[in-house]
Length: 314
Image 1 (tube, rainbow, N blue to C red):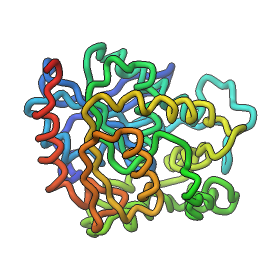
Image 2 (image 1 turned 120 degrees about the horizontal axis):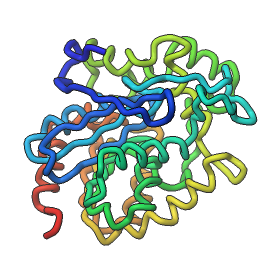
Image 3 (image 1 turned 60 degrees about the vertical axis):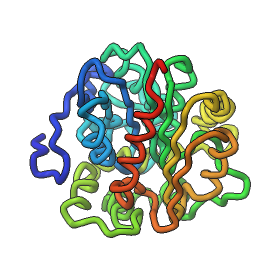
Image 4 (image 1 turned 135 degrees about the vertical axis):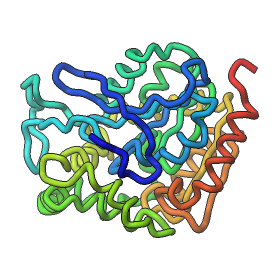
């Protein structure tokens, strides 16, 4: 796909067959011998979310930014279901199982394909926290620095109710149908996930990959895979990630947080503060879920300073 029309996205995406017949799109920007920064997006965004940070780092740092399968410019395979995923999962090799474990496996395969066996900085946002830390807990020695933006890496805090907007997609057949039919989740996030309104062409860039029933499959499957209790498919992985998180407390961590986020709010921020008590925290009362949209002029140079001041191997 030609990306020249996308604002602030002067990149050439690459492709990797992560599973037979299914390809991921990803960015690999910056010097091959630069310190590696792996940036993992969530739902319903894509690598476009990280564009300002890539532009701010790629002169020195190697920035690897995947689009998850079904997201962004990656392939959007069927899973054999419709409004809801099939149960049991389809065994058709052309289908894809849209689960947290699949995302972790895909990230593992991409980094192996690129030969990333040395030290990395892990940057995560939204459900990219669960995916990124799902990979990281099996690669603890590699992960030397953390950049954490409005995300989760542990179960829903007890004091935090499940937001009804997510329940609408996760638990309601009508809600799930509407989200997939009309691309409601991506369109809503690009409008209401920011404090500073996005320009129209930026909103379109966020929404574009998910227009149409086929293309919106991953946005609803992410919601339907949210684990809330034992018995949910992703629950065991979620518990393991949450239990592992404090093991990262001995390495430099940067936390950037939009406090107006109705999902990843102060309850989640407090969870990261407890797990990573030495983290450098930048919390903004006037920023929302897409904190890099609201505050990239502040966050990008702050993250650059953080990385520069904690060089790998120092």
